[in-house]
Amino acid sequence: MSEGVGTRPGSKTRISTGLRGLDEVLCGGLTPDRLYLLEGTPGTGKTTLALQFLLDGAARGERSLYVTLSETADELRAAAASHGWSLDGVELYELVNEMGLDPDSEQSILHPSEIELGETVREVIARVESLKPDRVVFDSLSELRLLAQNPLRYRRQILALKQFFSRRSCTVLMLDDRTSEAGDLQLHSIAHGVISLDQAPREFGSERRRLRIVKMRGIKFRGGYHDFVVETGGILVFPRLIAAEHHAAFDPGARSTGTAELDLLLGGGLVPGTNTLLLGPSGVGKTTTGVRCMLAALERGETATYYLFDEGLATVLARSTMLGMDLAPHIEAGRLTLTQIDPAELSPGEFAALVREAVEERGSTFVAIDSLNAYLHAMPGEEHLVLQMHELLSYLNQTGVTTLLVLGQHGVVGEVRTDIDLSYLSDCILLFRFFEAAGEIRTALSVVKSRVNVHERTIRELRISAEGLRVGEALTDFEGVLTGLPAYRGRVAMLRGPDAPGDDA
Image 1 (cartoon, rainbow, N blue to C red):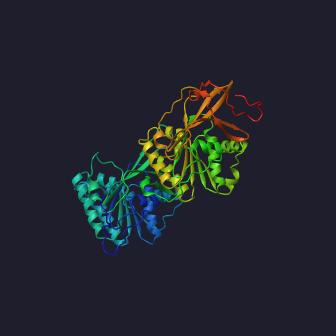
Image 2 (image 1 turned 135 degrees about the vertical axis):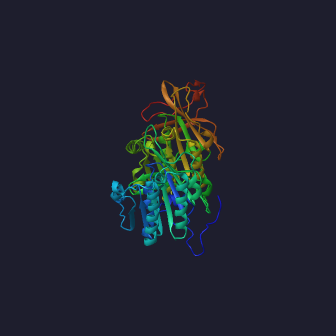
Image 3 (image 1 turned 30 degrees about the vertical axis):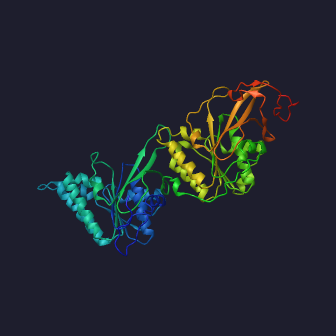
């Protein structure tokens, strides 16, 4: 990708596309007074993007022209109204109306396509010369292609239009629905830049939409695919997260989890700029432990965001309150944001954008994702999802955020397994296991990895009750705790429930 702008002296360096996310992908917007190709199959959002481009120009006092061969002006106004827009500041020009369908207007001496193509191009030129617009959208090239019926004639007419526009101070978007033969790159070579829109249906959930800058002469841009959605109000583009672009100064000192024994196990507590993986079977206490750690951060005055993929908000709030961890005051004070996520409706790029918003706009220094299972399983067709997660975690680490990741395992006692291995992405791993002792199912807790602290290598018992979360002494008199079926070698005082008599194991 080359650097520079390539605009004439005295002209603006860049102009906005009308979409903040797309401007970010383009590292500032489009070079003005150039011709661009916006391509995509029907339904990808080309018309919506084109309207946003023109409306942005109209809002800046520029003259905007929409030339349509494929949709009527009424259809365009209806599409704009569905987004809550008015096209009063945009000139709409229909090249094909009911007169063009009159059988009496057909030519008998020359081939109709030659007459219609020439007249179409002349009408476009005449309208542009009379209005002198700053921004033009031509919708769509597939209609010109059908009129030309010949690749050479079609290319010649596109070049003629490009040459005409180059002598006018206007930026042009030409829309194309990819009806040409596969591998036909004529338009790519003619256009100054090419923006490609894609959509892919999935077996369950909404379709995925993404865009890619195929080429853009004279400017730098962010390569690769970028997720986007079409919502009421327009298109939202989520630029691909590049962790290397984000750094922040922060204090790397360990922070307490709110439980002294857990701090000892972790070698001092949780460290900002690192992520901790809470790994274990369902029901073992991962979410409760995560909430306890988050509550300690909130009580220190930090701002936190908790993303729920599995449980409902009401369930988490009710259980936390029952266990003596009332989150409501922190939500009311604006220090805590609990966000319930529907992974079937969310793309990886959109989730990364949500996290960036929490960190950069709301100032969150503690982020929890509960759980990764639902997030990863809901997008089995998404390639390189683990790489995207790696980029997201690198971003959180480099901005000084304390991150908790919850990952459930299959199985209860004995052998357990994980569908996907994310241990190499984690700075610290807190391992949860069920084990049986004295006729009771208990929970063992251990730290099996830490990149930043000298941690205990012991196994402690975890007990969750109405009194909250308690971590006991090291289980030094048991062997095989992590197998789920330990052998008892001595006498260790086990944690008891509040109503349980005695201290025996």
